[in-house]
Image 1 (cartoon, rainbow, N blue to C red):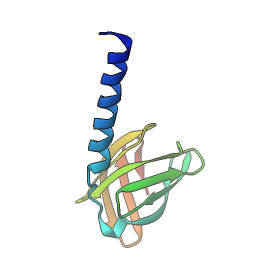
Image 2: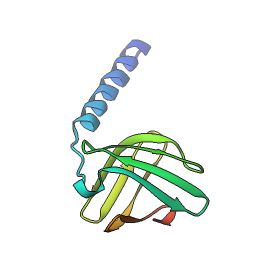
Image 3: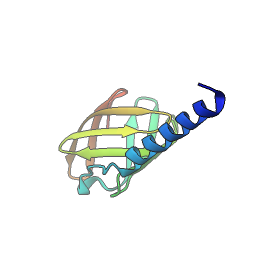
Length: 106
């Protein structure tokens, strides 16, 4: 395969993956849509969850990022170019308890 054909294959593959990712509909628990302040050991994390499945994370000690979230039925997952994680959650009133790669945060 020559260089031009290889670039075309990479481009078509990248576009196809982008279409699959952008076309996927995230599952979002409506009670979790909004901005949450979470505490983990050594990190104060601000997690904003949008109804369309997009999210942002920022805060002291966190890895700033934007990506796609699935948060429903007590299970959550996030996917971004810089981080992916998943785990369980419990919502008790206005307190969100998450467990994932970094342990448990509230």
